[in-house]
Length: 375
Image (cartoon, rainbow, N blue to C red):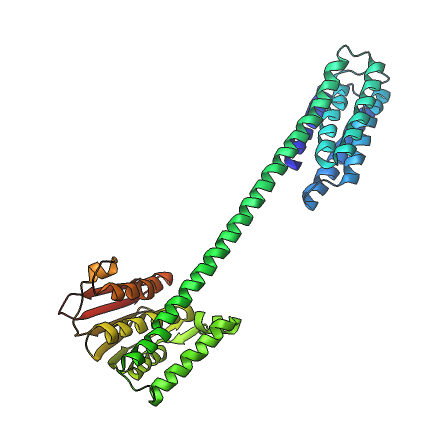
C-alpha cells in the first residue's frame, strides 16, 4: 500500500511540477506551497518505508495539510483564481484520501475523507468550477479503491500466513517421521541384531564382548526414551570431525562380539564430518549384520580407502549370496529381509549424506557391498 499510494501521490506531484514549469507567471507563494506538498509527502512516505507502515499521526497531518488546507492556500496565493498551475492542489486531495484509506482505521479513514471532500467543496465553490461533482467523485473513488486494495492485500497476506503455517507443520511432521525412521533403522541395526543373534544361540551371552555390546545398546535405548538433546547430538553428529579409522574399528569390534570374524584393511583414511561418519558406520554395521544373519558364513572382509577427501568402504563375504536385484526391489523370497535392510539401512543412509551404495551378489557367489562418500 505504501508503494501503490506513493506512486499515486508521485503522479499528482509530477502534474503540479509540470504545470508550474509551463506557467512562468505563477507566484513564488504557489511554488512554495508545492514545496510544502513535496516535503509532506517525503515525510509521510519516507517514515512509512522506514517503519514498515503508515504512521497514523503523519497520515492525519497529510490529510489536514495536503488534503484540506493546501487548496485554500493555493487559492489565496493565486488571488482567488485557480489557473492551471493551481489545479494540482485539487488533484492531491485524491492521493491524500487514498493514503488515509490505507493508513487509518475504517472510521478514522471515513472521517478523513469527509474532511477532504468538505474542504474541496468549499474550494470549488470559491472558484466556480464547472465540474465539481466529477472531482469529488474522483476523490471518493480514490479512497474506496485504496481501501479495497488494502482489504485484498490483507486477505492474501492472511492466506499466505496460513499456508506457511501449514507448510511448517507439515515439515515438522516430516522431520518427526524422519526421526522415527532413523530410530527404527538404528534399532534394526543394533538392538534387534544383537537380540536375534543371542536368541539363535550362536554366541554366548555371558562373554565380555557381548555383554559390553548389550550394555552399550541398553544405554542407547534409555537415551532414546528420554529423547535428550545430548543423545541426538551423539547419534546425529559425533562432533565436527571423526577419524574414519576409529569409527570403522568400532564397527568391526561390534561385529566380532557377535561371532563374526572380520578381516579389515585401511588405507589413507580422512577425517569425516560427524553426520557422514554416523551414516557410514551405520551402513557398514548393517552390511556386516547381513553377512552374519544371511550369508551362511562366519567370515567377512572390510576394506576402507580414502580418495580425494572422500572414502570408499567395501564389505565382502563368500557366503551363499542372493538375487540382489529382486531383494533391492522388494521381491519375494528368502532375500526379502536382506533387501529391506539394504534399502532402508544402507542405501537410504548413504543417500541422506550425499553418498551412494552398490550391492553386487548372486546365489552361490557371495556378496559385495560398496559404500562411497561423496557419491
